[in-house]
Image (cartoon, rainbow, N blue to C red; front, side, top):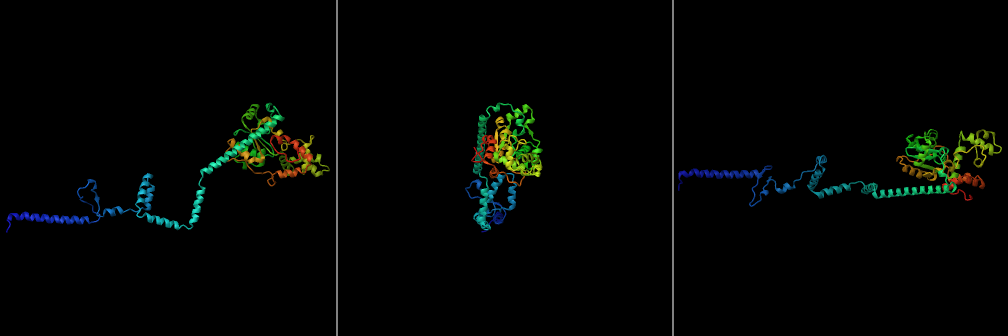
Length: 427
Protein backbone atom coordinates (compact mmCIF):
# COMPACT_ATOMS: atom_id res chain seq x y z
CA UNK A 1 0.00 0.00 0.00
CA UNK A 2 1.38 3.31 -0.99
CA UNK A 3 1.24 6.14 1.37
CA UNK A 4 -0.08 9.41 0.14
CA UNK A 5 2.60 11.87 -0.84
CA UNK A 6 1.42 14.32 1.77
CA UNK A 7 2.49 11.99 4.62
CA UNK A 8 6.15 11.61 3.54
CA UNK A 9 7.25 14.94 4.96
CA UNK A 10 5.96 14.42 8.53
CA UNK A 11 7.36 10.90 8.59
CA UNK A 12 10.83 12.01 7.61
CA UNK A 13 10.64 14.76 10.23
CA UNK A 14 9.85 12.25 13.02
CA UNK A 15 12.68 9.97 11.92
CA UNK A 16 15.15 12.85 11.97
CA UNK A 17 13.89 13.96 15.42
CA UNK A 18 14.33 10.43 16.81
CA UNK A 19 17.84 10.17 15.39
CA UNK A 20 18.79 13.58 16.86
CA UNK A 21 17.49 12.59 20.27
CA UNK A 22 19.50 9.40 20.18
CA UNK A 23 22.64 11.27 19.26
CA UNK A 24 22.02 13.77 22.10
CA UNK A 25 21.67 10.98 24.67
CA UNK A 26 24.91 9.38 23.49
CA UNK A 27 26.70 12.72 23.78
CA UNK A 28 25.39 13.31 27.31
CA UNK A 29 26.61 9.86 28.34
CA UNK A 30 30.08 10.71 27.04
CA UNK A 31 30.12 13.93 29.01
CA UNK A 32 29.20 12.08 32.20
CA UNK A 33 32.15 9.75 31.75
CA UNK A 34 34.57 12.65 31.15
CA UNK A 35 36.62 13.53 34.31
CA UNK A 36 36.28 17.05 35.69
CA UNK A 37 32.94 17.80 33.95
CA UNK A 38 29.98 18.48 36.26
CA UNK A 39 26.43 17.85 35.20
CA UNK A 40 23.10 17.92 36.91
CA UNK A 41 22.09 14.40 37.94
CA UNK A 42 18.38 13.86 37.73
CA UNK A 43 17.00 12.66 41.03
CA UNK A 44 14.78 9.72 41.49
CA UNK A 45 11.27 10.62 42.53
CA UNK A 46 10.06 11.29 45.13
CA UNK A 47 13.01 13.29 46.57
CA UNK A 48 13.57 16.34 48.78
CA UNK A 49 14.88 19.35 46.97
CA UNK A 50 17.88 19.51 49.39
CA UNK A 51 19.12 16.17 48.05
CA UNK A 52 19.81 17.69 44.64
CA UNK A 53 23.57 18.48 44.44
CA UNK A 54 26.42 19.04 42.06
CA UNK A 55 28.77 16.04 41.88
CA UNK A 56 31.72 15.06 39.75
CA UNK A 57 32.03 12.00 37.69
CA UNK A 58 33.94 10.40 40.58
CA UNK A 59 31.77 8.51 42.97
CA UNK A 60 30.59 10.06 46.23
CA UNK A 61 32.64 7.50 48.19
CA UNK A 62 35.82 8.43 46.37
CA UNK A 63 35.14 12.12 47.02
CA UNK A 64 34.70 11.54 50.76
CA UNK A 65 37.89 9.46 51.01
CA UNK A 66 40.02 12.11 49.32
CA UNK A 67 42.08 13.97 51.99
CA UNK A 68 44.48 16.86 51.25
CA UNK A 69 48.00 16.37 52.74
CA UNK A 70 49.13 18.43 55.78
CA UNK A 71 52.35 20.20 54.79
CA UNK A 72 54.95 22.24 56.73
CA UNK A 73 53.78 25.31 54.87
CA UNK A 74 50.23 24.66 56.11
CA UNK A 75 51.53 24.48 59.71
CA UNK A 76 53.33 27.82 59.27
CA UNK A 77 50.13 29.35 57.95
CA UNK A 78 48.29 28.00 60.98
CA UNK A 79 50.81 29.65 63.30
CA UNK A 80 50.37 32.95 61.48
CA UNK A 81 46.60 32.84 61.73
CA UNK A 82 45.27 35.85 63.71
CA UNK A 83 42.61 33.71 65.40
CA UNK A 84 44.34 30.86 67.29
CA UNK A 85 41.10 29.16 68.28
CA UNK A 86 39.93 29.05 64.67
CA UNK A 87 43.32 27.71 63.65
CA UNK A 88 43.08 25.04 66.30
CA UNK A 89 39.67 24.00 64.96
CA UNK A 90 41.02 23.76 61.42
CA UNK A 91 44.08 21.88 62.66
CA UNK A 92 41.83 19.46 64.53
CA UNK A 93 39.84 18.83 61.33
CA UNK A 94 43.06 18.16 59.45
CA UNK A 95 44.11 15.70 62.11
CA UNK A 96 40.77 13.95 61.75
CA UNK A 97 41.48 13.69 58.03
CA UNK A 98 44.68 11.72 58.63
CA UNK A 99 44.38 8.74 56.27
CA UNK A 100 45.52 6.13 58.80
CA UNK A 101 45.75 7.05 62.52
CA UNK A 102 47.09 3.65 63.46
CA UNK A 103 49.93 4.11 60.97
CA UNK A 104 50.76 7.47 62.58
CA UNK A 105 50.87 5.79 65.96
CA UNK A 106 53.20 3.14 64.58
CA UNK A 107 55.55 5.83 63.24
CA UNK A 108 55.53 7.59 66.63
CA UNK A 109 56.30 4.31 68.37
CA UNK A 110 59.22 3.72 65.98
CA UNK A 111 60.61 7.18 66.76
CA UNK A 112 60.45 6.41 70.47
CA UNK A 113 62.25 3.13 69.89
CA UNK A 114 64.99 5.04 68.03
CA UNK A 115 65.86 7.04 71.20
CA UNK A 116 69.52 6.17 72.05
CA UNK A 117 68.77 5.44 75.71
CA UNK A 118 65.09 5.35 76.68
CA UNK A 119 65.88 4.89 80.37
CA UNK A 120 68.24 7.90 80.29
CA UNK A 121 65.52 9.94 78.61
CA UNK A 122 63.10 8.91 81.32
CA UNK A 123 65.67 9.88 83.96
CA UNK A 124 66.10 13.31 82.39
CA UNK A 125 62.36 13.75 82.29
CA UNK A 126 62.09 12.71 85.93
CA UNK A 127 64.79 15.25 86.88
CA UNK A 128 62.91 17.99 85.05
CA UNK A 129 59.80 17.07 86.95
CA UNK A 130 61.72 17.22 90.21
CA UNK A 131 62.94 20.72 89.28
CA UNK A 132 59.42 21.94 88.78
CA UNK A 133 58.45 24.39 91.54
CA UNK A 134 56.55 22.58 94.24
CA UNK A 135 53.91 24.77 95.87
CA UNK A 136 53.72 22.56 98.92
CA UNK A 137 57.52 22.63 99.35
CA UNK A 138 57.51 26.42 98.97
CA UNK A 139 54.83 26.64 101.62
CA UNK A 140 56.96 24.43 103.86
CA UNK A 141 59.97 26.70 103.42
CA UNK A 142 57.86 29.77 104.12
CA UNK A 143 56.53 28.13 107.27
CA UNK A 144 60.06 27.22 108.44
CA UNK A 145 61.26 30.76 107.78
CA UNK A 146 58.33 32.19 109.71
CA UNK A 147 59.08 29.89 112.66
CA UNK A 148 62.72 30.94 112.58
CA UNK A 149 61.77 34.64 112.64
CA UNK A 150 59.38 33.98 115.50
CA UNK A 151 62.12 32.21 117.44
CA UNK A 152 64.53 35.13 116.88
CA UNK A 153 61.87 37.59 118.02
CA UNK A 154 61.28 35.54 121.18
CA UNK A 155 65.05 35.48 121.82
CA UNK A 156 65.14 39.27 121.60
CA UNK A 157 62.25 39.58 124.04
CA UNK A 158 64.05 37.26 126.48
CA UNK A 159 67.29 39.25 126.27
CA UNK A 160 65.47 42.54 126.89
CA UNK A 161 63.66 41.08 129.90
CA UNK A 162 66.95 39.86 131.37
CA UNK A 163 68.54 43.27 130.93
CA UNK A 164 65.54 45.06 132.46
CA UNK A 165 65.49 42.68 135.44
CA UNK A 166 69.18 43.20 136.16
CA UNK A 167 68.87 46.97 135.78
CA UNK A 168 65.87 47.01 138.13
CA UNK A 169 67.97 45.34 140.83
CA UNK A 170 71.38 47.00 140.39
CA UNK A 171 70.48 50.41 138.89
CA UNK A 172 66.88 51.18 139.87
CA UNK A 173 65.51 54.44 138.48
CA UNK A 174 68.48 55.01 136.20
CA UNK A 175 66.27 55.23 133.11
CA UNK A 176 64.70 58.39 134.51
CA UNK A 177 68.04 60.21 134.63
CA UNK A 178 69.12 62.71 131.99
CA UNK A 179 71.35 61.36 129.25
CA UNK A 180 74.71 63.11 128.99
CA UNK A 181 76.66 63.51 125.77
CA UNK A 182 79.43 61.35 127.15
CA UNK A 183 77.00 58.46 127.65
CA UNK A 184 76.05 58.46 123.94
CA UNK A 185 79.53 59.22 122.59
CA UNK A 186 79.96 55.61 121.34
CA UNK A 187 76.55 55.53 119.61
CA UNK A 188 76.54 55.83 115.80
CA UNK A 189 73.52 57.19 113.92
CA UNK A 190 72.04 56.00 110.61
CA UNK A 191 69.09 58.28 109.87
CA UNK A 192 67.81 56.54 106.71
CA UNK A 193 67.09 53.29 108.52
CA UNK A 194 66.57 55.03 111.88
CA UNK A 195 69.24 52.98 113.63
CA UNK A 196 71.38 53.77 116.67
CA UNK A 197 74.34 51.42 117.07
CA UNK A 198 76.60 51.42 120.14
CA UNK A 199 80.12 50.44 119.15
CA UNK A 200 81.52 47.54 121.18
CA UNK A 201 85.08 46.79 120.03
CA UNK A 202 85.90 43.12 119.36
CA UNK A 203 82.21 42.32 118.91
CA UNK A 204 81.88 42.81 115.16
CA UNK A 205 82.07 46.61 115.23
CA UNK A 206 84.22 46.95 112.06
CA UNK A 207 81.68 45.10 109.94
CA UNK A 208 78.81 46.95 111.60
CA UNK A 209 80.37 50.24 110.55
CA UNK A 210 80.60 48.91 106.99
CA UNK A 211 76.90 48.03 107.09
CA UNK A 212 76.00 51.50 108.38
CA UNK A 213 78.03 53.10 105.59
CA UNK A 214 76.14 51.09 102.95
CA UNK A 215 72.77 51.86 104.57
CA UNK A 216 73.63 55.56 104.56
CA UNK A 217 74.68 55.58 100.90
CA UNK A 218 78.36 56.19 101.69
CA UNK A 219 79.46 52.96 100.00
CA UNK A 220 77.95 50.56 97.47
CA UNK A 221 79.14 47.34 99.09
CA UNK A 222 80.66 46.25 102.39
CA UNK A 223 83.38 44.50 100.38
CA UNK A 224 84.57 47.85 99.02
CA UNK A 225 85.44 49.26 102.48
CA UNK A 226 88.95 48.56 103.87
CA UNK A 227 89.40 48.12 107.62
CA UNK A 228 91.05 51.51 108.15
CA UNK A 229 88.37 53.29 106.12
CA UNK A 230 85.64 51.66 108.21
CA UNK A 231 87.12 53.27 111.33
CA UNK A 232 88.95 56.44 110.26
CA UNK A 233 87.04 57.53 107.16
CA UNK A 234 83.51 56.23 107.69
CA UNK A 235 81.86 59.70 107.81
CA UNK A 236 79.32 58.29 110.24
CA UNK A 237 77.75 60.67 112.74
CA UNK A 238 77.67 59.96 116.45
CA UNK A 239 74.73 60.74 118.63
CA UNK A 240 76.66 63.23 120.76
CA UNK A 241 77.04 65.40 117.64
CA UNK A 242 73.34 66.37 117.69
CA UNK A 243 71.67 68.96 119.88
CA UNK A 244 69.71 67.93 122.94
CA UNK A 245 66.40 67.78 121.06
CA UNK A 246 67.96 65.67 118.28
CA UNK A 247 69.45 63.27 120.81
CA UNK A 248 66.17 62.89 122.70
CA UNK A 249 64.09 62.38 119.54
CA UNK A 250 66.40 59.70 118.15
CA UNK A 251 66.60 57.89 121.48
CA UNK A 252 62.81 57.89 121.57
CA UNK A 253 62.00 56.79 118.01
CA UNK A 254 65.01 54.95 116.53
CA UNK A 255 65.91 51.26 116.86
CA UNK A 256 68.71 51.11 119.47
CA UNK A 257 71.15 48.29 118.73
CA UNK A 258 73.77 46.66 120.91
CA UNK A 259 75.99 43.67 120.04
CA UNK A 260 77.95 41.96 122.81
CA UNK A 261 80.42 39.10 123.22
CA UNK A 262 81.45 36.64 125.92
CA UNK A 263 83.54 38.93 128.18
CA UNK A 264 86.61 36.70 128.68
CA UNK A 265 86.71 35.94 124.95
CA UNK A 266 86.40 39.63 124.08
CA UNK A 267 89.28 40.46 126.43
CA UNK A 268 91.59 37.81 124.90
CA UNK A 269 90.66 38.98 121.40
CA UNK A 270 91.60 42.56 122.31
CA UNK A 271 94.92 41.47 123.85
CA UNK A 272 95.90 39.38 120.81
CA UNK A 273 94.98 42.17 118.40
CA UNK A 274 96.74 45.02 120.23
CA UNK A 275 99.78 43.35 121.79
CA UNK A 276 100.63 40.26 119.72
CA UNK A 277 100.55 42.01 116.35
CA UNK A 278 102.60 45.06 115.33
CA UNK A 279 100.84 48.22 116.48
CA UNK A 280 102.17 51.75 116.33
CA UNK A 281 99.84 53.02 119.07
CA UNK A 282 99.24 50.33 121.68
CA UNK A 283 102.85 49.18 121.94
CA UNK A 284 104.39 52.57 122.77
CA UNK A 285 101.42 53.94 124.75
CA UNK A 286 100.25 50.87 126.71
CA UNK A 287 103.02 48.33 126.19
CA UNK A 288 105.89 50.40 127.55
CA UNK A 289 103.90 51.46 130.65
CA UNK A 290 102.81 47.86 131.37
CA UNK A 291 106.32 46.44 130.97
CA UNK A 292 107.84 49.18 133.11
CA UNK A 293 105.38 48.59 135.94
CA UNK A 294 104.81 44.84 135.95
CA UNK A 295 107.96 43.22 134.50
CA UNK A 296 110.96 42.72 136.72
CA UNK A 297 114.34 43.20 135.07
CA UNK A 298 112.80 44.36 131.78
CA UNK A 299 115.27 44.76 128.92
CA UNK A 300 116.05 48.17 127.53
CA UNK A 301 114.70 47.11 124.17
CA UNK A 302 111.36 46.06 125.68
CA UNK A 303 111.10 49.28 127.63
CA UNK A 304 111.74 51.31 124.49
CA UNK A 305 109.42 49.43 122.11
CA UNK A 306 106.68 48.26 124.43
CA UNK A 307 106.44 45.05 122.38
CA UNK A 308 106.07 41.60 123.90
CA UNK A 309 103.56 42.25 126.71
CA UNK A 310 102.44 38.92 128.19
CA UNK A 311 98.83 38.12 129.01
CA UNK A 312 99.47 37.88 132.82
CA UNK A 313 101.17 41.32 132.66
CA UNK A 314 98.20 42.73 130.78
CA UNK A 315 95.76 41.31 133.36
CA UNK A 316 97.77 42.81 136.23
CA UNK A 317 97.46 46.20 134.50
CA UNK A 318 93.70 45.69 134.00
CA UNK A 319 93.04 44.89 137.66
CA UNK A 320 95.28 47.60 139.11
CA UNK A 321 93.23 50.45 140.58
CA UNK A 322 96.33 52.65 140.15
CA UNK A 323 97.01 51.80 136.53
CA UNK A 324 100.01 53.48 134.97
CA UNK A 325 97.92 54.27 131.89
CA UNK A 326 94.20 54.72 131.55
CA UNK A 327 91.51 52.34 130.31
CA UNK A 328 90.70 51.68 126.66
CA UNK A 329 87.38 50.99 124.92
CA UNK A 330 88.64 47.60 123.69
CA UNK A 331 88.55 46.17 127.22
CA UNK A 332 86.03 48.45 128.91
CA UNK A 333 82.97 46.45 130.08
CA UNK A 334 79.88 46.91 127.91
CA UNK A 335 77.90 47.87 131.01
CA UNK A 336 80.09 51.00 131.22
CA UNK A 337 80.75 51.58 127.54
CA UNK A 338 77.15 51.66 126.24
CA UNK A 339 75.04 52.47 129.36
CA UNK A 340 72.49 49.68 128.69
CA UNK A 341 70.36 50.41 131.76
CA UNK A 342 70.04 54.07 130.79
CA UNK A 343 69.49 53.71 127.04
CA UNK A 344 67.27 50.60 127.16
CA UNK A 345 68.34 48.98 123.87
CA UNK A 346 65.57 47.58 121.71
CA UNK A 347 67.82 44.99 119.99
CA UNK A 348 70.55 42.98 121.72
CA UNK A 349 72.66 40.82 119.45
CA UNK A 350 75.50 38.49 120.29
CA UNK A 351 78.69 37.69 118.43
CA UNK A 352 78.01 34.00 119.07
CA UNK A 353 74.88 34.26 116.85
CA UNK A 354 76.08 37.26 114.85
CA UNK A 355 74.94 36.32 111.34
CA UNK A 356 71.41 35.28 112.32
CA UNK A 357 70.92 38.22 114.69
CA UNK A 358 72.35 40.83 112.33
CA UNK A 359 70.42 39.70 109.25
CA UNK A 360 67.20 39.45 111.27
CA UNK A 361 67.73 43.05 112.35
CA UNK A 362 68.49 44.23 108.80
CA UNK A 363 65.29 42.66 107.46
CA UNK A 364 63.33 44.14 110.38
CA UNK A 365 64.45 47.71 109.58
CA UNK A 366 63.77 47.35 105.85
CA UNK A 367 67.37 47.14 104.63
CA UNK A 368 67.88 46.24 100.94
CA UNK A 369 67.42 42.53 100.30
CA UNK A 370 70.93 42.15 98.86
CA UNK A 371 72.58 43.60 101.98
CA UNK A 372 73.64 40.93 104.45
CA UNK A 373 76.07 41.13 107.33
CA UNK A 374 79.64 40.50 106.11
CA UNK A 375 81.61 37.60 107.50
CA UNK A 376 85.18 38.46 106.63
CA UNK A 377 88.20 39.21 108.81
CA UNK A 378 90.53 41.69 107.13
CA UNK A 379 92.59 42.69 110.17
CA UNK A 380 95.30 40.10 110.86
CA UNK A 381 93.51 37.73 108.44
CA UNK A 382 96.05 34.93 108.95
CA UNK A 383 95.48 34.85 112.68
CA UNK A 384 92.94 32.34 113.94
CA UNK A 385 89.75 33.85 115.29
CA UNK A 386 89.63 33.97 119.06
CA UNK A 387 87.50 31.04 120.18
CA UNK A 388 86.42 29.56 123.51
CA UNK A 389 89.29 27.08 123.33
CA UNK A 390 91.85 29.82 122.70
CA UNK A 391 90.36 31.84 125.55
CA UNK A 392 90.68 28.91 127.92
CA UNK A 393 94.35 28.53 126.94
CA UNK A 394 95.14 32.18 127.75
CA UNK A 395 93.28 32.18 131.07
CA UNK A 396 95.06 28.98 132.10
CA UNK A 397 98.17 31.19 132.42
CA UNK A 398 96.49 32.95 135.37
CA UNK A 399 95.96 31.78 138.90
CA UNK A 400 92.47 30.96 140.14
CA UNK A 401 92.46 34.18 142.17
CA UNK A 402 93.35 36.26 139.12
CA UNK A 403 90.63 34.58 137.05
CA UNK A 404 88.13 35.35 139.80
CA UNK A 405 89.17 39.01 139.83
CA UNK A 406 88.76 39.28 136.06
CA UNK A 407 85.32 37.66 136.37
CA UNK A 408 84.39 40.21 139.04
CA UNK A 409 85.64 42.98 136.73
CA UNK A 410 83.17 41.86 134.00
CA UNK A 411 80.49 40.57 136.37
CA UNK A 412 77.75 42.97 135.23
CA UNK A 413 78.32 41.98 131.59
CA UNK A 414 77.94 38.32 132.51
CA UNK A 415 74.76 39.08 134.40
CA UNK A 416 73.12 41.51 131.96
CA UNK A 417 73.68 39.40 128.86
CA UNK A 418 73.23 35.90 130.34
CA UNK A 419 76.67 34.43 129.76
CA UNK A 420 77.67 31.31 131.70
CA UNK A 421 80.70 31.25 133.95
CA UNK A 422 83.69 30.25 131.79
CA UNK A 423 85.40 28.33 134.64
CA UNK A 424 83.75 26.05 137.14
CA UNK A 425 85.74 27.44 140.09
CA UNK A 426 84.37 30.97 139.64
CA UNK A 427 81.88 32.24 142.21
